Image (tube, rainbow, N blue to C red):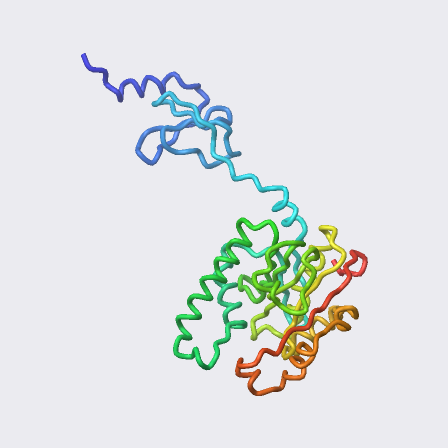
Length: 296
């Protein structure tokens, strides 16, 4: 005579401990949680601590419960270096500085594109296509920095739940996504700050400075003693920001400027430079880092 599977299941459940709590799984079968160990035929019990074992009474199987992927030591060290802080702004309200989260990558991509994407006059007809391609590359880079990269730290600034700014700092010998080509070159074996950007509607409130300070604190916490960055010759707002934060052009770098680099600096008011037809060049800045002179 064929065995009635439902009868067998009922008998199996009847032999469970009297102090088990039962519930209905997604497929209509029963599940039980016995003294902190989850037993189920299709669904884990959600309340209480995550169990170590998953027991399927009907199938007679025992499995380890899934656990979150362990972070590498390098990733854990990065997370610890950036302290989440709420800072009172110059105007009313606070800004929260912390590690950029995956959920904010799309907003961060839009912010970077709005502030940094430029198209040459000869490429104006292909503007939308070029922007789409660049946005895809930016998003992939940000997502990599958030999820897997161990050589970069992405920092966010939020007012309420709105992302209003980001900055990125590369660890020594880390990937700098094109910044290695900038002249004068920053030392590869030193930390490097890039892409400090704040939404235009939030400027003048001290958010940019907080993003820079967060990057400095993170590097100081990781044992770095100096932080480098570049600004474009014609980006006076960035130059003022970094000057207020204590950055200077290293004398040894300034002494080695080539005639071409000096000429680029004199071209910042050139109308062809403003159209993107002439490269204005960059200024390399640096700041020594010590925990003692960095505000908490």
